[in-house]
Amino acid sequence: MQTPLAMAIVFVYALCGLTVLGLLALFALKLRNISAEKQARRCQEKYRDYFVYLQAYSEEEERLKVPYGDPTQKEKQLIQKKLFELLERFTGVHREKLIRLCEDMGLVALDLERLKSGWKWTRVDAAYNLGVMRSRQAAPDLLALLQKSSANDPSLFIVARAIAKCARDNGDLRQMAEFVVRAKKNVHQLIVDMISDSQLDTDSLFTEFIRDKDPELVKIGLIGFSVHAQTGLEPALPKLVMSPDKEVRIKAVKLMCRDVRYLSEQTVKDFLNHKDWEIRALIAKAIGALQLAAYIPALKKAVGDSNWWVRHHSARSLAQMHTEGFAALCEILREERFGHKVDMAHQIILEELEKEKLRLEQESSTEQQLAYNEKLHLYRKSYKKTISTVQVMEG
Image (cartoon, rainbow, N blue to C red; front, side):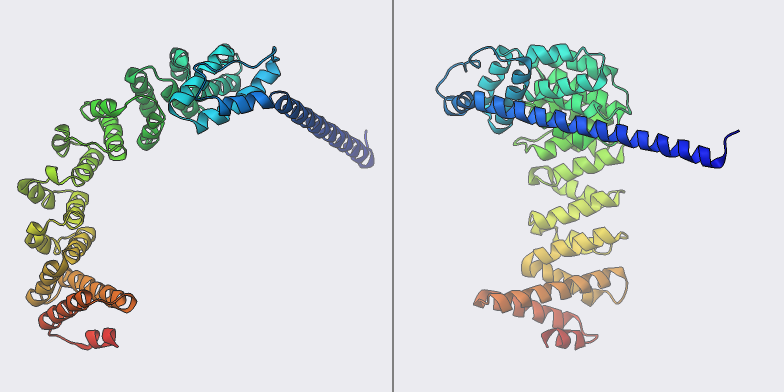
């Protein structure tokens, strides 16, 4: 039977052995890193003139030449890193020439082969490389790899972004988007970001998504429309306001509120009376941003809305409508005695007067002074309960 002392000695020896093994492993890694750095420096020195050639003659050469000599596999990988830096830096024709060079050097073929590896992270690394090289011939294999990914696999996004960069057409992008949106929740913005990496014209794809029956794809389309400005009107947007999906309704209205061409008198009226407070708030804010003075009476009424954000944006928009809008806020003080409506109007009036006063202190002009005096007069005339707040503010 072992004594406690003997057990302690065995434990100490075992601990020392593990410590030595750990130190040896660290030392081996250090030596490996030193060796890799030396190889990288030698490669950099060996191909210095070639790297200068790539940057200096990329415009003149119709097709870039492959490196001279016969680079080893390791040297090809180091050259690939340099090419990746240039690929991320250049666009247009320069990038196309570098992509063709990657193919001529066999780098694309190498990573296509690595894509079939039994090791997961080798496949993921190959997918990333193919994405950087924007190899269209890799799109089918990348789509197949994506289909095999599980919903909980974080590398799914690396493969999906690679597909976006390598996509041959919008059909590839659509397949990628459909898979990712089914596998993950709340990734619509990320999918749009990935699609934006594509070299293709994606406007038509976002239009397809907006007109799709799947609300998840519709959300992607709406976000895509908000990121990539559209010149024409999209007839599907007004219909989406009636969508059973609240997020779709709100995103559609947000887009419509950016373009006055969507905002007919009836549309504005419908939005201000919509069941979703978010939509009422959006249109109230848009009226001020677009300076739609014709809707001052409607905004004045909306200052009495049951939702704080609607009241706030309505009052703010009135304040943006210069003297006419400010006068409408002052009318609320005259017409209302108490309640949320008069409180909000009073708060915005005082904030607006304070901002005008600060502007005068920083940069005074006759026009600004007249505008401030007119607003102050309107406020004093409408608010008869007490004038102490004005005196405090002017002091």
